[in-house]
Image 1 (cartoon, rainbow over the protein chains, first blue to last red):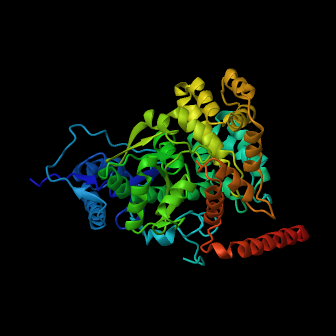
Image 2: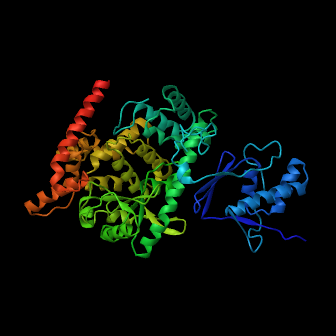
Length: 150
Length: 381
């Protein structure tokens, strides 16, 4: 039987906030900024609440009526990216919360299952030189205008 | 766009934005709609810009749908990130000071972020204000310098401590600390801050222990520090004071507040600030507080200082009068010659002039530049 895996956010080096369904993640040690939305934000919130990879996949597969193995592969792909960026840590002792809060969709839930994308933004020092009103595109900071100085 | 390059009180437009950022229900909605009609988010003054994250958060929390909120969200995300980085940068500093047995207290935005806003994105700040006991100021400054933090006032440490109540330190982008050893520039007597330390409230930044002022003292600090002329038009203090009142209104010891202001000759400033909050934002200030402060006998000197502090910088004299009032609060030697020397050194430090012999020439040059800039500005209009 495969080993059940649980992760935790790599705090205090990594901080995150949810803004209107988007997870904003900052690695304070590396100075990198990330964002996850839609399915990615749901997976992040589930990891934060110490749900296992298997539970997350099962929840999403059930909700979107799609193949659980495919979803698990997708979730694992994202988790590997998060691990590579040192945003999450594998919990060695397995589950640490006896009854994590149930997984739910908060805010506007995506109508279809879309493969999550971890948006990664470069050096924070450069990003913070941007004027968040005049030098950003329609999505706002930290998405730069194509002709921006950065 | 607002053409006024500074002020001591919020402008009418800033008041509307403050109401959108702090009020609930219809009061919030109507202020927001009115503000939008009269302002262009592309051309805002710095004071208004600093209120955008709070406005975004307040409007969203009330389910407001508005296309402009995307622009405000952009500023919110930016401030959230910047503030997180700033807080992260002070953790090793607080730890090091704690290890040296130096107590620390966070002031202003840093303290309010932890205790009242409880959200890193709502209160923009350019630096983190940290108070240490006056007796530890020398050791703290030595530590900062040794760690590569560049002081705003690079003068002998004893002189900096004598003439200033705080000194900024910079260690690169978004690593800025304003180190205080007295809370108020106007109150420099020995042990005058003891009461603030006595009632300070413990908080943690990550796992580091530090302190913040009690709600009563935070309100006093926000009001006294806020009502001063500032090129950025200081409307942030209004948001701070109203947030303290909204969240900790029941914990304010009003009698203590009045006594503290009276003992420090700050009753006139506090009365002005609280009256403004009461009349413009319907803040719940007990009547006995306002009447008590209003009836407190204030000297001509205290009123004159208040007038100077809320007045714009003089074209000819710059901040000379503000500095001079500031100098008057410093404990002095009884020797008149020593006092004159101190005063000259004090001005030299405030004007950041390295060589005392060049001081008269620099002052004349700056005076001419300032007057000609003023004339150009008038010609432009």
